[in-house]
Amino acid sequence: MLGERIREIRKKNQMNQIEFSNQIGVSQGTLSELEQNKYNPSLETILAIIKEFNVNATWLLFGDVASEDGLEEMARELNELENTLIIKFRMLSARDQGGIMDIIDLKNARSNQ
Image (tube, rainbow, N blue to C red; front, side, top):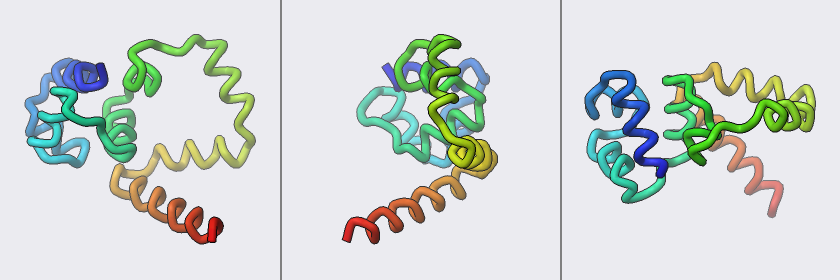
């Protein structure tokens, strides 16, 4: 389960819950509940884990690694602008990524009115 994979990342990096939670921007209590699968992490938290610990997103979310062919196919489906956005998004801090997500949500809400 997702919480077990989060715990695995933390232990692999030889971090206690306080150190790991500070690194990904959540409280120690929240991390404890995530590791116990009491609830799912926010997108911002997932992205912080992926970015800070350089983990495969498919493995983190689903527990398996996508085939190379599947990754290549996904990359072909993205246009140049989408690829650029992903690259630049990944370079941002978790906090800034959250800010970008807020802007996207705001823009989507306005366009749906």
